[in-house]
Image 1 (cartoon, rainbow, N blue to C red):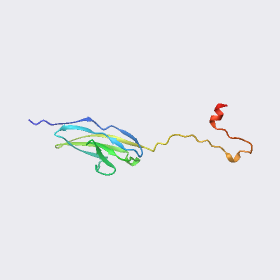
Image 2 (cartoon, rainbow, N blue to C red; image 1 turned 45 degrees about the vertical axis):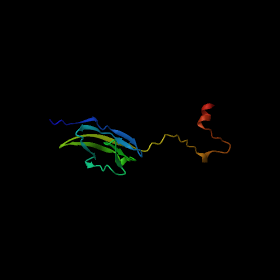
Image 3 (cartoon, rainbow, N blue to C red; image 1 turned 180 degrees about the horizontal axis):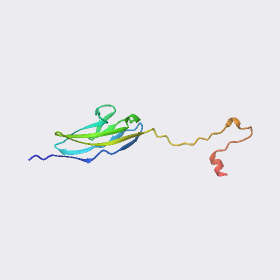
Image 4 (spheres, rainbow, N blue to C red; image 1 turned 30 degrees about the horizontal axis):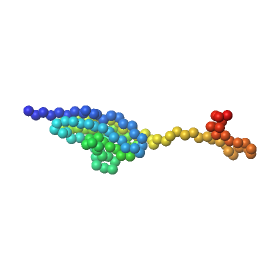
Length: 126
């Protein structure tokens, strides 16, 4: 009796990452005998042994130093014998994080001699 199965205990989920950071898309696949898998970006097969892409834990896709160009749909395709099963996720890459800051615009050129400039902290204490 032949017993075989394939399932996705963990399907890829959408990922948001800050530009310049690494992104990981998880695809946990189990089956017997062990299935093969391929990652796609859109309709194109991803080269899994490159500076940009590699595998973690055998099936998770690591995208190094993510940029806006890496945003898009990624699909984990699992092949067992002649059957394919797939699951997709979206990667969104946000611009580099820059903490907010306040800019005080002072027209120094219009200050007259004898006038003083106070910081916001000094004004709040008065």
